Image (cartoon, rainbow, N blue to C red; front, side):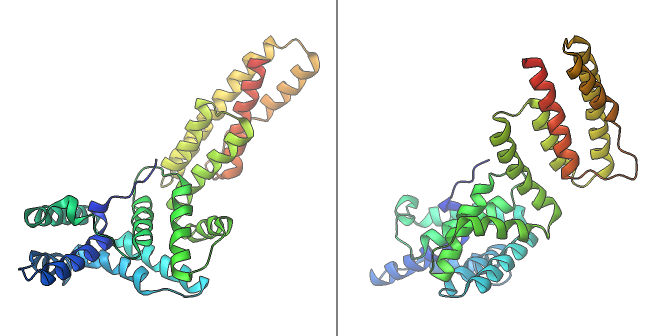
Length: 284
């Protein structure tokens, strides 16, 4: 899944635009509805005020070291996880409705904002993090790179950023697996050209069963039995005696996981290889 930047949902960007609108209204010597809107949505303990603080971290920290920049981003991610996303969505809807009552939206959002690129990158990063669907890991890498370059004012290596993401998300098992799913998918696609439907289901199940060890083990055992049956049928059709012997050995070594065994990435890789073997035999 791709994540696109939305000016209408970017809390940090809208704040900056409201400030600019207040200045413009003041210079034109006219009342500024933006003042009332700003106080209504960006003060006190409102959800938008809480989220805006995350964007403020980015705009107020520049020229800092890489380690501190990583800490800033890690803090932002952790706080964002705790925000009520449904309430945020509702307040953003009402905020845009109030702005629309007083201003032409196209004109309002056309103003240039300093640090726009960094604000847009943070929006995309938070959207990717809080999205329930699988998100392309390149979204994480690209936007984190942009933010780190903004904070440090130095060019960042995307390979280093990718590794730091994996290390960071290791603190959140489910999110790491979501990221790992996409990375594994990339690696397997490069190795095997095109994944079989069975292989994609295995990867998907590895993610969706993150909170259920029993369910994942049952899925794997079912897949192993399916592989065993398919290889058994294919062995009978093989003419080469040596290959037949090797396949029989493979079938004999396929055993279900016990209730004490956990499903790990090695188990995942073995299952993927079994299906690749089936594919190669059928295509031979």
